[in-house]
Image (cartoon, rainbow, N blue to C red; front, side, top):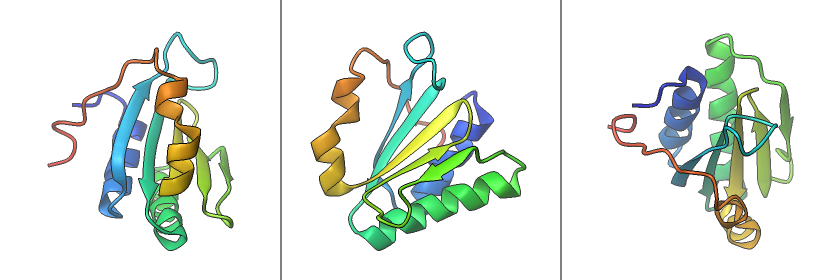
Length: 117
């Protein structure tokens, strides 16, 4: 079970649009930017946009401030800033190239079991 409501909403929204390989990095004590990174990918620009749109919609429906959304038009790497949760929605090719999981390899991952049923 995820203890952060914003993170849980973002994970469920991404999963609803069939985001692949959803990974959560616990950035507490590692990054000053946010407490969590949610990383996932889509296999086409349309899917990347659909995932980002669903996360944005879910945040708005739950009165969660969307601080920033970048990269939506290109749909190669969309960054969604939800304050203590930063979501990275990649196109599959960009995810392999940037490999944030390796870049932030010292960050522990959070288990998604119990969230995605």
